[in-house]
Every structure is written in C-alpha cells, then in structure tokens.
Image (cartoon, rainbow, N blue to C red; front, side, top):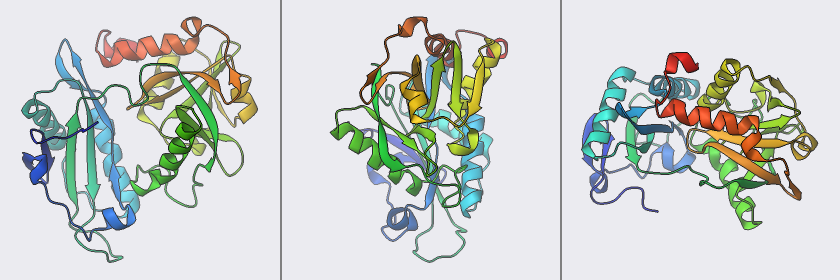
Length: 296
C-alpha cells in the first residue's frame, strides 16, 4: 500500500509540508549506513478523540535511542507530541500509525552528528500482521547479540535482520518468523515480542534477550492487574512448540494469536486462553474503554 500520497502532510524539522516536497540527503548516513533511530506509535479513535497510546514513553525511547548511538537530540518531547497531534489534525485522521524518525546530517563522515533531522509521518493502518491468527516459523537468522549493537535502542539499520527473517518466512508460507539468539534460546519474533502459555501460566524470554517493547511492558502490567502468573526466563524452541498457546505483541501488530509454529498446530481454543483475555484487555485499554489508572 502507499502510506503517503500527494495529499499527505508530514512533519520535518519543525515544519508541516506535503510529503512529495520533502527532500532528503542522498549522501547522509541514514541511507548509506542505516544510521538513525525511529519509533512506531499508534493513535486510536477514542471517545476522547484521537489519542496516542503511551506517547511520552515512545518519544522518551526515541531520545534514548539517539543518545545510545551518538546522535544529538535537541527537541522537546512535549512539543513533539503536540506537533504530532497537529499532524493528525492536518491529515484529518484519528486512527493512525505514526513513525517518528531521527536521521543523521548531510554527510558520510564518521563523526558525532550535531545537526540531525526529525521526520514524523502518519497514516491509517490496521494491525501490521493482519487480523487473523498467525503461523510462524523458527528462522535460521539469529537475533543480534548485545555486544554487536545496543539492543535497547530502536535503530534503523538493526532491523535488516528482522526484515530478512520475515521475508524468508513468507516465502515458506508462514506469516512471521521467530528468532533465537546465538545461544539457541528464543529471543522474539522479527518485529514483535513473544509470549507463550503453558498450564495457565505465561512465559516470555528474558528481558536481556530481546527488544524492550513498550507493548511488552504493557502486557506485563496487564498480567499484574489480572493476577496472571508471568515468568521471564530462557525459553527453547521446544517450549514454544509444546505450548498450549502463544502470541506476539508490538505497537504495530498489537496482540496477535499464534496458531502454530512450523509443523505444530495448537489445538486448545484461543478464546479461552490467557492471551485472548489479554488481547481484549489491551484493546479496551488503548481505546480508553476502561479507566487507564484502574487497568494498570
């Protein structure tokens, strides 16, 4: 799909402009080296109007990502949030996926970036992985080790591995890939965090093994509120295949059921699972159908 068209406005370095008129440096490190940081945020059409879910957390993580890779961050996050709401208003959308991105200056030199740019785009977009349950495959690609890149940062170039894994999974007839680390333990899906359910208890890979997703943190908060046992530990591929249920979560995908992995199909009804309960609770939370402070 075309996310941006001739009528779409975007936000670039403090100005709103038509997407087609926004120039980009052809010699910048963002293009040549994948050197930049980004976020994915969702706005929902609630009874209170368009509302971004956990906007402060997302922009704070964007700032942290920039600092971790040495890109200066001269912007005020409260102002960026206000500008993003203005961007939604200009584009006349209330339910949207929002992509802020910070990229390096107009050079290819290995120096500290002192003049970065910030771009924010927004478009109407359903769940990234669709609405149906997912069949996943364990990928041959490995999730990066913490010694290779700062895993706490959301870096543009870091997601090449995820993209390769997803494309390989689709070619094999699956909807998504699950990656293990170099140690063989489960890490996460290509672009989402992973949870598995066994004997009415939830498990998720240890935090050090995967990306610290904001949706992942929200799921943990929901589990605490609903008194659902959740264990973070090293998990194997066999743990995933022997699970009663499993699901993925991310801002883009929201909470998505996994119906099977490789040759294994889960036979327990999803509607009766802990994951389905979390899925419903999460949807009510982002749509503000429940009081936020009461839920988490």
